[in-house]
Length: 265
Image 1: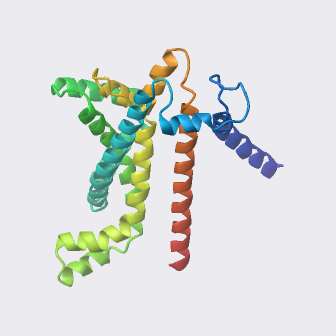
Image 2 (image 1 turned 120 degrees about the horizontal axis):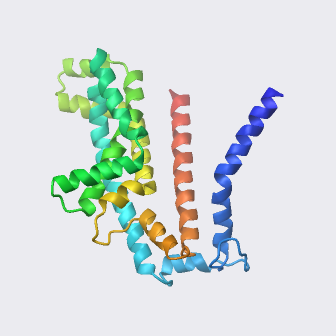
Image 3 (image 1 turned 60 degrees about the vertical axis):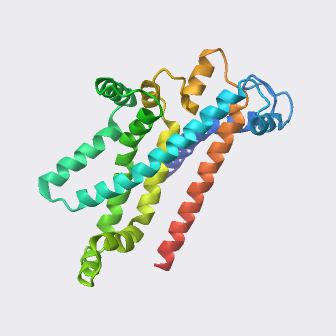
């Protein structure tokens, strides 16, 4: 009975998590502007999404472009900074390592609203004009800790003598880092990049407080503004479906590759 209730609980939880996504995907194949009102099968919303034949298409396309650009830049920088930080943390010892690890975990458990307001006040204090730069810096600030968290386990699993052996064989520290450490840490770096990328795509509160008043919209702030007008643009349904499917495929490919790598190892 315990096993039955445990499995039932897991399945109920999965249904609650994924039912809204399935619901949106189903109603992305109908032209109704009201979610939940089925007016017949149609791919018109997908056609409108790709052709731009919809009301406010330029705003939505601009929001998607801004979202992808900000997420890509912030995730790349977070991956580099997070990898370097993870190597530094790994080489620390004792209380210093515990203190720095604790400080790294704070941005991940800190509420987004507090992070957004804090960064907003910081940029105002430093007289930095809010816009693309402040949003990217804000996303880097909360994306980097996730990369650190992804890379640290790979450093722990790695043989600590490999790097020193490369130095003894004549490699410079830069060569040892690039040709020895990076290949060993690549799976953790890729996982951290994906985490930082998806966290940037998903973020609303931090972006809302750091984007300023220049009209910069990401997908999350666009949806918020659109909802306040009295309803959501129907083309958002196919867009959400496509984003979910792309991320799902990426995760499946990465997990399959990691499973094959473990088998060959």
